[in-house]
Figure 1: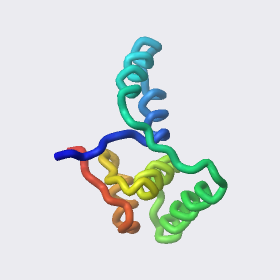
Figure 2 (figure 1 turned 30 degrees about the vertical axis):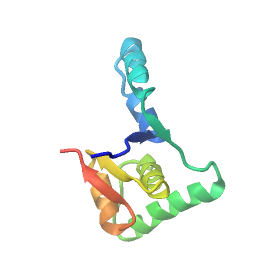
Figure 3 (figure 1 turned 30 degrees about the horizontal axis):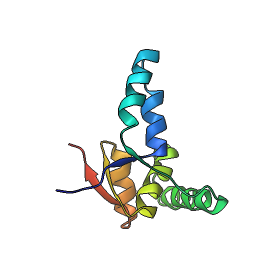
Figure 4 (figure 1 turned 45 degrees about the horizontal axis):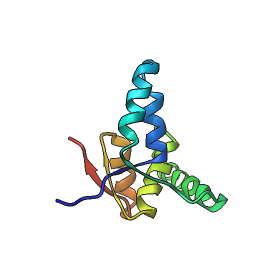
Length: 106
């Protein structure tokens, strides 16, 4: 299938910061440089929306392990993308936000 693939800028950061050493960092950077990077608008309203998503989940008794997950989810929503993941937090988020379309990596 012709499914566009790319990374949110936040996922890009997470992958690079997981490198074990400089050589792995450079290898990952080279591999990721071939992918399309998706961004969010750098406006206060964007971050307010991500914070509101986190707040609404927390109000329901749901806490995600990373505030970056809200920005990754919002990137998928704003760019009308399905989010391919291997992180249970995204299943939880999508269970309360039908506008987030997810695909499990496994």
